[in-house]
Length: 348
Image (tube, rainbow, N blue to C red; front, side, top):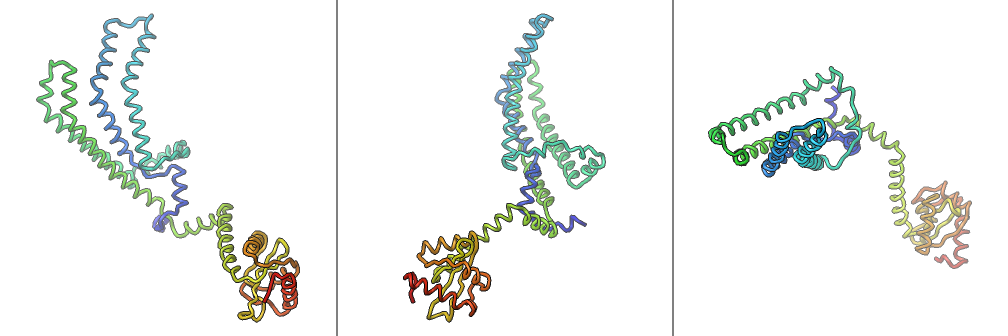
């Protein structure tokens, strides 16, 4: 029943957390397809060289059998011979695997995904995975893949059987080259089959991945509640709010007549226009950072400022923005306006 409630798309935070845990949508079949292509291609282009190295190694073994005296040198010789043959294939398969992984999920490394998960050893969990929908899909996919590959291989051998028999007694290098030429179409068919199955598997894995990350409305509410409690989120919210306030204050100060400061902690922005106002009006107010911002704007725009701790605090705490000051503040504010007029900073 709990899964039935998970109808909402995953949030960016849930997706990020899943990626950090190594939970991503990827198809092993696509990796297998490109690995097969690399191996087949290298056999086709370098098969003669590989066989030549192997023949040289066994020829040396037959011509001069190993003894106790030269056992170490023989071992080193065979390691080098096999290394020359296998190392290029291993490197190419590794590179293709990394590139394929990067194409499917991006460049992601998660230590948690390679950490041993002992709960997977639990027989109950094993049978639960095997008989789940995902497990059944994996079995069907494997059976389909084996059936198609077997059919292609059988048809290939059947169609080329007489040609293969004709190679009996021929030079082995010539026979190898001809066999590789004969079966290149079969290799291509095998590759295309695995690619198609891999693409379908990738689409299915993405569907299952997104389905597995779905959230219930309650999950989203809890995540939002948790996010709001994190320090970095609170800091970001404060930053956004401060930016909005500063934008609003900047706009209001276009109509400002003067500013009263506390002198550093509080600033109030006042307007008195004889044609509009019956009394001085509070346009904006701020404390600490916002007060500093108000003073900076006033200084830049040439708005008169005056320091009066008591009046600034009285206006700040008794008046809301966009409201006229109370009558008991008229006398104090008029005195401030007279002082600014005496300094020739204000005129009406």
